[in-house]
Amino acid sequence: MSKILILDFGSQYTQLIARKVRELGVYSEIVPFNTPVARIRKKAPGALILSGGPRSVYEKGAPLPSPGVFELGLPVLGVCYGLQVMAHLLGGKIVPSGKREFGFASLKVLDRKGLLAGVRDKRQVWMSHGDKPERVPPGFRVTASTPNTRVAAVEDRERRLCGVQFHPEVIHTRDGNKILANFLFRVAGLEADWNMASFIKRKVAEVRAAVGRGRVICGLSGGVDSLVTSLIIHKAIGDRLTCIFVDNGLLRKGQYHELMENFRRKFSLNVKGIDASEEFLGKLRGVIAPEKKRKKIGGLFIEIFEREAKKLGGADFLAQGTIYPDVIESNPVKGPSSVIKSHHNVGGLPKGLRFKLIEPLRELFKDEVRALALELGVDKGFITQHPFPGPGLAVRIVGEVDREGLDILREADDILLHEVRRAGLYRKLWQAFAVLLPVRSVGVMGDRRTYQRVVVLRLVQSTDGMTANWFPVPAPLLARISTRIVNEVRGINRVALDVTTKPPGTIEWE
Image (cartoon, rainbow, N blue to C red; front, side, top):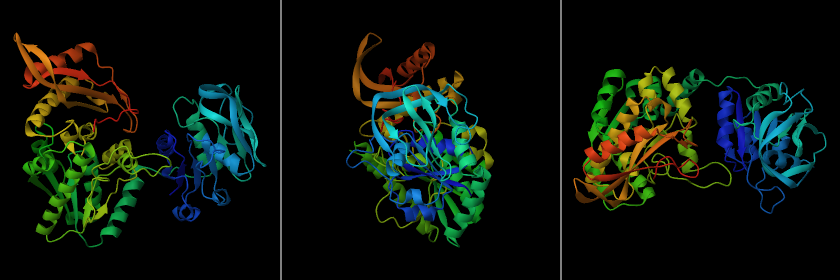
């Protein structure tokens, strides 16, 4: 299988490069910028991409790749900072730009024989840089420029090294996909062999090899990720998989019973349901910090799975629906970045875990998981459901979680989703949910003063959950939702709307 490794220097667009490459049919994987050459060689990529980044190559302590990266004989594409790294290390010179360039620029193509084949003049590209190559390395030729940047693209065709000063991965660069495709197929000579059918075949073989004659427990959350995980493992080992669906008391209204029925009726899975709501509420009593909530919930799930494993006569493996964004946000592999939050599958697991983990979706983005679900025969209605966090409503109640707050939030959330579906907006949104705040506000109901809870509505659009835009909800719909919540949910007298993008916010509040 063709493979691209992306060396991440801390760009906000690195995940987008990975997604675009996969969309073109080539598997991509993000690794830290300083990954040792020996490890790169072991992963056997067909080519490398050097991402952008916020630093300057001439700064003290600037992130640079391991020595020898350019001596591997692999085709390399440098993007923005990645181009500057390549030029800096191969004998060129990088200097501060006299005029920094952020935003749109018009590309003048000087050579269309390689990376820029089929790219027309004056096509829009997206720039984001404060440095520029003043001198290109020996063997390189300048193949494109913009009015403010003499070196907008360079190529050394003999060594199959090339770079662009702009960002081909963003939608604002009009021929960005064509440029990436030229690198993958014309320069690197790779094949477009990444698809869901090949992924299933590979993962089923990997699970069989890893598990052998052992048994696997898979925790179902009610979402697409864990269901697809269980279906792949079931393909690999059949009845030696036991799925466990825990009612942790943190699910949406009616969600547990509805999902249990679906799991048993629609899928040939061995599913055991467990009511542990009182245990989870007990664990969360007095807990306010979001990270502590996630770890408490993750730890209790593991305790339950270990108990059930003993009842089954032992299970050595625990399967989880961890996906790539969970890994990136919990324990980033990229360069100079920080943990955003601990995913319950990644940062919430206790030390000394007795299970070996099986995570077949760990390298997939959310939209790829949905495509995989279709390939596995899951009905579209289930696939297009909005993501629901593993810690459930616990991370949608800011502050301490208690039964009263959960009951209030469940009712408000149910009204929101009902009205969103009624308006025909459900499938246009990535997520729509309510958040309960630990504050009270003064209101007037029936000529009486009230002092009750505040709920916030969060409606966002996204492709993969890595970035998101808030959705401009029509005013009549907002009015209907707000009126229903205040009238029908005892304990709420004020409704607010969250209009924050990701970044700088996250989609969930905790």
